[in-house]
Figure (tube, rainbow, N blue to C red):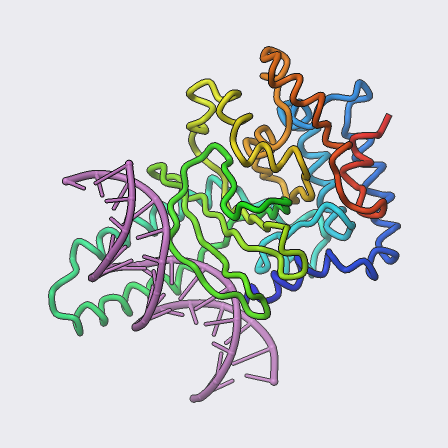
Length: 297
DNA sequence: CGGGTTTGACCTGCGC
DNA sequence: GCGCAGGTCAAACCCG
């Protein structure tokens, strides 16, 4: 299933495909330029501003699915379905709805657990029954967002608390994929972390869903915490990807990139100045979508 | 003791 | 229908 997804992700790395994408890229540039305020707002400011701009960039990123640097790993299922429609039209399913749906599924599961008996056979048949009922109400997957980060640390600190619930070997890759769930109650956000087998220094973090709560780090005056976090450090050093789809994980971007807090926190602000994103993008020119985005105007 | 990680088993979806 | 690979579960274990 997500074999496709893996392929999709890695295909974007393929430098030989970039030529075919110039057209889409230029469209992306236009949209990004239109989306960005002429006043060179920060990336985070951009995400924090109106939904209009937000949507514009979403669209831009959608186009950029075919581009070189902004690598997206939109949910493979929705992608397949979307292939029959326009590229921008697909991923508009409300993540809240999906979350609610998942909640109901979870509560069903809890009921399952409550009613679990000692008899293993019975347990198995129950499981099968619950699976059957699950099968009927095939819930749509939440949109996914893949972030590539050059880092030696696999699990990057992003301000949220995660519980690892699984690890799997990835086909054709020496590096395992780890599965994490947000530890916050009722939050159904998941993320997968794996290392690129082509470039082991790159960590691929795929987020699924949207947090329905505040970032714990944000709640306790986050700028210091985030700034000192390894994630921030690595992100400052090399942001190599962004996302696509309408429900961008804004918090992540806020942490990934200098926030308004930088303006109030002199140390952070200085750090930002010293570590300008543009300066630290370590990819070749044709990778430079984000770079272009920041150098626009 | 509570919360997180590890890991083998199991489930599911997809391609052949 | 079968096999494969991804995704999830849950018991055992670890750690502060």
